[in-house]
Length: 187
Image (cartoon, rainbow, N blue to C red; front, side, top):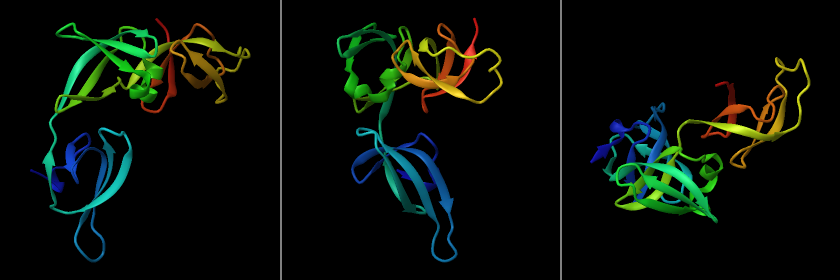
């Protein structure tokens, strides 16, 4: 059993018979009454985020979540093919199941695939990925210091905004959690 005192980011618990992952928590002591734990939790099967408060000391069942390393290999129609890094077995996941994560998948990218009691529930991308800019409008010379941005299409088809000095063919680091430009990468 897990108590509210054991909460930490990434903890998986059962709430009302459904699996949730704690993504944010705060212990709150109002002026009168008992302390409460405020949380933001992500439903592991649906992916929705819920805010909820629990009484201090409330108990929860833990959830058996397993993560396995897989490597993205290629796209086959509307599905993505991953290879298990230990068994070399291939696994196919549809674009709808991956959701927005599909926008940042490039060949040979290693991801963590999450299973709940043996059932596939999703993938976790690295925090940042490096992708090539394949289409953007040309920048103007001297615009390397301004904070103005322009749209850019990446090799995976994702569209992000980049600073004006980024040009086609540049490699950029992208935050996979927010989909935002981080920096230009030089090799």
